[in-house]
Image 1: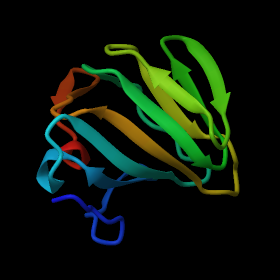
Image 2: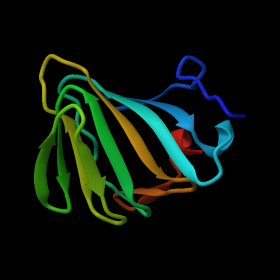
Image 3: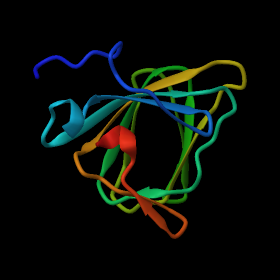
Image 4: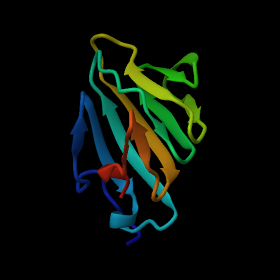
Amino acid sequence: MPLSTLADAPVFERHGFTFRPLAVPSRGSTELAVWALEIAPGAQSEDHHMDREEVFVVTEGKVSADIAGQEVTAGPGDALIVPAHALLRLRNACPNTLATLTAVTSAGMRATIGDTVITPPWAQ
């Protein structure tokens, strides 16, 4: 399937984060996983890490991240590059504005939150 539209993407929500898979195995991609991500004002992710490298490109707003103990803030057009197995926490750096990003990783990635390993449904 050569076209995967945002309008037809399933919606997954977790703690103020909204995930919409674009190019993932369930939508026709075999090697990459790409999703649109929205972070509600003030929302912050749990500390977690992935078994594959992940890249986030900010499209609107500002996003702060702690990546392997390094605090960074990214704005529109900036990319957050997260190495495999690096501890990560993302948060919307704006208290009143939605932040939007595009996330890219490898198909089949798994995330670890505490002692729990999951295959995120938005990456399948």
